[in-house]
Picture (cartoon, rainbow, N blue to C red):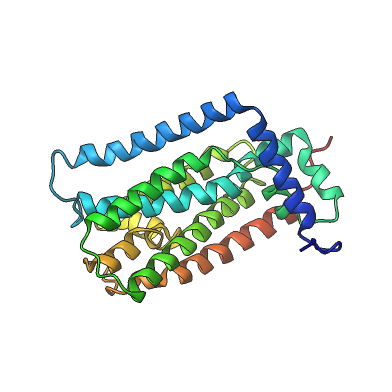
Length: 271
């Protein structure tokens, strides 16, 4: 069926399609990007496996359960990174004046930034996460039914939304920290690393920061604990994994406030 001529999202879909074609047209470069991204993902997965050559369990999670946590976290983060991860480029856009061009167009600033690029190489990382998740589901004793399938779907959708919110959250702060993006990256990429670990091994400060303020525990650890019937942290109930959508809403409320404050603060690059 033909696209309605006045569809508001048609221009954005056209831009994204052109970004995808431009990346895929340079096949050697695209293949190398995919290969390097795949290697990084496999290396991080190997780190998890190596840890369990010395111990049988970490924080109540054995290797099989950790595959489930790692797979969920890595899949959700990679998908969010592919779509909105280039919000990291905001300081460069500010310095070069490219952001000012966005202001001249009658479209939402954030939507223009999100559609300004798409990192297809992240598909390789997402594949590593998906394989780890599938293997984790196979090797664990999961009681399959509508509840388990529903929890997995809720966890993946909410996890992607939470990580995407974290990128936007950091993007809003970068209006103030144009030369200090490493600080926000510490929380974005540190949060991703924390999400691949069981919350039971976190100290109290990490529980506060990555358990609730940046709700990384709700992206993978808590849904996995609920699915497998394992103990949770901080006295949370066994069904806490179902609260992942609430964590995603909180993350987007904070991201929206951060973004709106940053946009109102921005005065132009002076170019």
